Length: 460
Image (cartoon, rainbow, N blue to C red; front, side, top):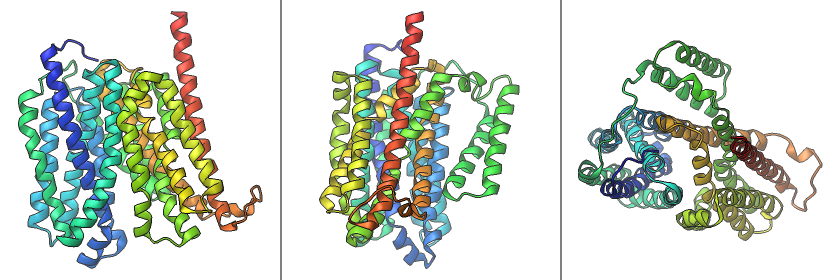
């Protein structure tokens, strides 16, 4: 962390961080809105649901690439320049999206570029907080970041539905222009900070990008070709960085056992986060005959409550400590899954309780996990470290969906290990227990890393 800033510069950084937080909510709001209007795009362009989902899926690839690019490049390029580039990439594609709104291809291309630029705000927000803000104040800003995700999910869903219904889906393309209002503040108040690393390894980044794209496709649509290509890119990247003089990421980065173990902990911890959103509509349809529109309303209460928890999570963490806060979060998540697994079939009230416990648990978890992970990294690798942390979270989220989809199509109800009055609930119970266990593995690995660090400190 850079501690050479004056009091004036630190004040300016806080102002910029707040602006970037607002931009983060705006960019995520747009992502959620476009995901929601997939059925409308299918009808408008007379295309299949699979093709209509390209706006969301291709945008998701743009998000994966963009986060890696902007977070990693902060180790080489000033955050000020990257913020300006990111805001422009987020706002300007709306022009092509509106001008060529009759072409679905142009809409998809515009959304891809917009997603790359939009995710820059999330990436750079985390880097700014991790690099320039110290100690107890840092976890407060981390908590606000978590809150931005839940708030934008609720607002994005409502905004996308309202605007597309009453004004047309194209109106969503106008919203990003609000981001241009942030540029004067960023240009005036964001200090230029010199970087210790100056030569960007573009070839290394290209290979890493190919790996990111490949693994995103592999998780979404598993196949032998994608598996082989992903492995090839991993081997190629490791071979490349072991041979070049100034690689994008050094081999020492991957030899950092504590950081890598924290990524493993985070991976297991986040397997269940989006899987919960995926399985809930199937559960509500099977138990209560809920439609997708009705299911969407179920998430408003738990996500709103988790947003409030996330806003105050920094203060909570400062009061009880990161390890206690993360343990509390893990216990809430596991309790929510176990409770939901055995009670959700009774009424939607029990579903709401389970969802609130789980989302509330995650609201307490992001800051402690990220803070612990980057604590094992030198300052020059913070940007790259945050990029890999986010990549781990997103990969775990996507793989969690695939695992749950596989389990839903399996014959879990024939195991005869659990007995419930409602037989249709039994497969969901098994899945909920499995998701609780992945969280348990994650928190146990976290404690192992913490214990190892404590022992190292005692030895020194």
